[in-house]
Image 1 (cartoon, rainbow, N blue to C red):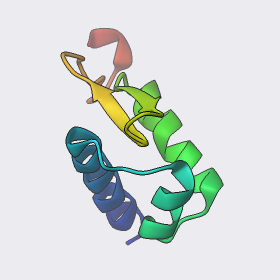
Image 2 (spheres, rainbow, N blue to C red):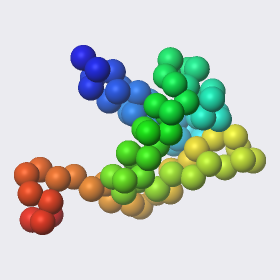
Image 3 (tube, one colour):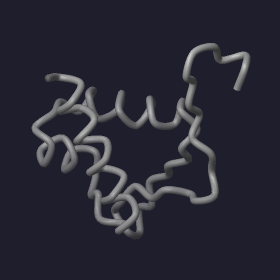
Image 4 (cartoon, rainbow, N blue to C red):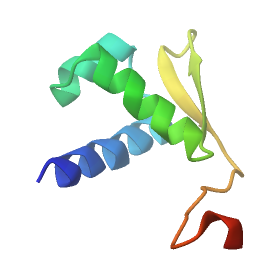
Amino acid sequence: MERYIFLRRVIYFLELCKQEKTGSRKEIANRFEMSDSGVKRMIRDLRDAGIKLEYNSTLKSYIRIENEQIKVYTQNPENN
């Protein structure tokens, strides 16, 4: 169940990035009922997967830099 909840949060976070309406990390933590460190970890995991995210202080939102491939490993990372 935990993975399902985390996945839903990630999908929602990416939708908010697309709309440029995430808010600050603290606001994300409140909205998702997560700790600040949990939000940091989620953002780090997304970046590690190859998703380019930046915080735009003018928009007060994380934004996704498009045209990036997401790294998906099905079985063996060397084969991808």
